[in-house]
Length: 562
Image: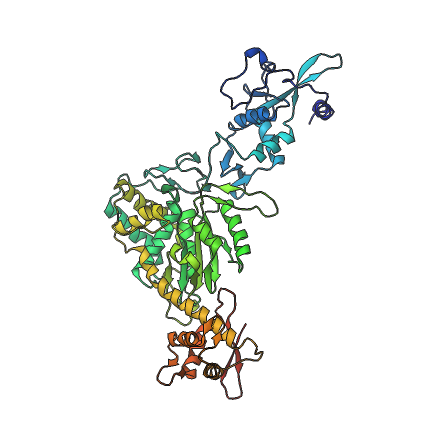
């Protein structure tokens, strides 16, 4: 800052600078008619400033006044000319170029004045030593920057939902391929790599052949059913076609019966095809408070993908349910009192886990991809494509083009309906992604959800069992055996209660597990001991679990609730 400008700012703080609105008729920008011409503040000198913004040429002049609304309105109109400024939700953001590529940066008051000076010259009327008035060029005031950002309203600015590195599919089936902002999808394209020209008029046959090519790299995965392959295609198309439909997108949990089945590799390669990068892996917090913080960070940052890895036990809860079905989203920035908002949840959620279950309403918000491996040592398997990630990276442009072909062909065919009921809360996704997959000749990807009800029943039985055993032995500090459970049940009077269950309801829990001997009206403790092994170390919603604590002197397994 020059010494002259420092003096001006000092005189401003001392109250020596005149208000050009002093004695004039008050006029607010939102009023229908302005005051008479003679009532307006004096015009700044008719000259050209560079002002540090680069490029030269005639610039906008803003005569600063004591009227905050006037200063804010004029400055906002000037800032609309800045090519890097956008609005994300109710937050003013800047698209910055970094060594990692372009990123979305939320502006703070300190970052805004240099951008203000790039688009406008700020002028004040000051009184000279001899009493004469003159226009002085000043730096954009920091208090004005604070007022602009605190207002939370930025009319006229372009809405930005995210930054992508691949051609963007529009709702009409056309593609945005040039670097920069696309108003139709509200996305900023920073292309990475070269992509083949799209098929000019793709047909249903083109879509079917493209789906087969898209599945080819994943042929050695042990999908449970052909519908699980369709669900994998649904994940890839969801990532690519997010801007081509309205509404939220379901979550894609990738589950398997054993560790090492390839869940993480499948997720990484699917995301690599769609985005050009391998997703960062994050953990799923235990408490809803921590889950809410994690989701706020992910959604408000506009992350295209969130991969929750190695889920154990139950996945779900209020914060996740909200993020999956919300079209707009408001959250808290860590360490600040701000509650920024995004008008469009851009993130696609993926999870991996072995035999994971879904709590609350999450079960109806997911499209599972199920893997099965019959090899007890899956890490020792050999593959025709030894390095799948490198293979996908090499052929990524062609695979991406195949995914686009499926969606474009379907859109250009006027998006024929698939004849099934739409998935509630995800109607826009269903009418594009699910319908395109069925139209291309693949199974319905929602067929993988048929197992969820069975899994939910098993999860409910597990939760009841943990609560029941905890109530039976709540006052016991040493481990117990399955025989101890049988004896405890025999000693229960008919009218007694075990936790929240009556004694009869408690016996019904074991009957539902298939370990109650109805003829003898008692627990089959041998069968129950074997059943306990299947429930060992699986946490319930309260993070309690059945834990094996070794054996007693008779070589009978000991158990405890922890």
